[in-house]
Image (cartoon, rainbow, N blue to C red; front, side, top):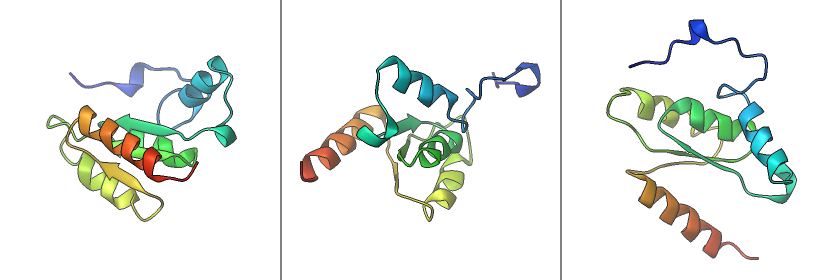
Length: 104
């Protein structure tokens, strides 16, 4: 089943790659983008673009039912760092390893 954008009226900017969803989470947690690292994990290039739009890190987990998403995400690599992982566990391990290797 595919998502049909024709039936969505988005006045909140919540559809990716817009940042409404990210800002809602930050507000709920009383966090600002300046005082946290933002990672967006998803199975589409729009997830990666969402991360790039807020100066975060995009992590793509390609989904076999969405052909072409890995190529779309790779085209974004020249804008900022993205990571392509095989599954959620590998994505989480990469994020934890990255956080551990950075100075406090």
